[in-house]
Length: 476
Image (cartoon, rainbow, N blue to C red; front, side):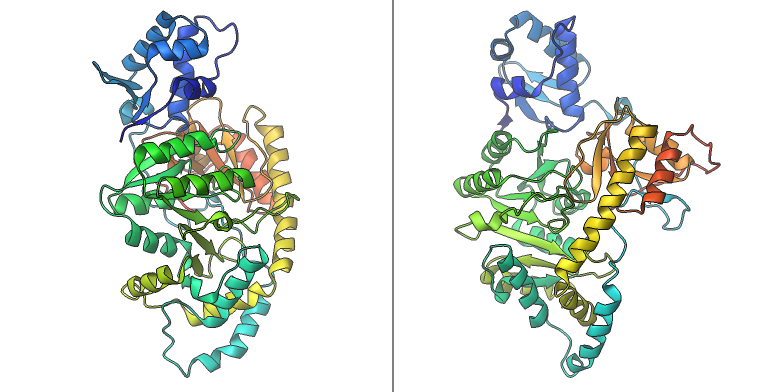
């Protein structure tokens, strides 16, 4: 089924300054900006000229001229009698000729391409506790595709404390959240299947979906957060049976979905028979007092909301432990599938994470202090060195989603690399070459590192004597 936007929806999205002249040029620029920013996905049918003119209160000739300009620039395709669809010009026109490839780990650059924090200070105690219990587990085979009971009980208890009744048999432990995503996509999607994603989104869901041959259905997230009518209409129009969402301190925007929107999203998923994969990797990392948010699965009545969690962001990425919360039947199916991949996660790492669950509130308090100080330092440095960059300071999570003055993220990344800083351009988080106007700036590094990095980014290219990085890769 074709996706489309109504005239009222598009009119609400475009931002044309009052008094802009000529209006058609400003309108075309606004629509082009929506496409480049990923808020208006490609291959979406736009409203007829007459209907959009009525919604905007302008003449049809004005909209026709704007559409003609968008077609000439490669942002609209039209077929007689069928309407017009959003598209993008070729990579050369967008300045994206060079693909991103893997970079060496030790290139001497400050790692602002990664939003992963360093290990919690409580890790040593948890390792010691796990070491005391480890020998008891050597009496068995060490293979448990669903995970150690002690860890599954700890994970289930945490869901219960968040207001979501959960049994241990509803949990399967995985080797990180990335394996969890891979297992679910393998089980629930196949070649050609439409998979709804947010734009921007976590880069590695894009990798897995493409590897499965799925058809990506992006839905833009505006600066003020999710617009449920855009999300649910895309769900209906695409007939997507699978959707991946990050409602808690969204990566990379930092948005936190309100409870009302959560209930509406699950209701829409039930209505259109869509299964929701809910990435909860950042859920425990509130910095400000925003109150508790109900887990998305608390609105579920028929097992269509599947939670994905991880130890990486709260405790440490070196603990390759993640988990999936679903129905007991789903866990059994995943265990059979997982046994062909790696059989089970490392016993010692599971014991460490189980011990850390007993220190949950201590860890959250530690992260609030450290991430809060780093967030404050990053914002202050940006205001001092790069005041024209715009962003919304999130209440939690690990990064700022920064909007640049023009679609120049690739150039900014290259200039920053020449000054010793690796950055994550917006294009990593989108599809079809979009989001070139954005950068993700994490505040998971210490304040001094962030202050130094922003000074380097703001300086003329090459001032710090580093050679430009020739290769980059998306990261967490």
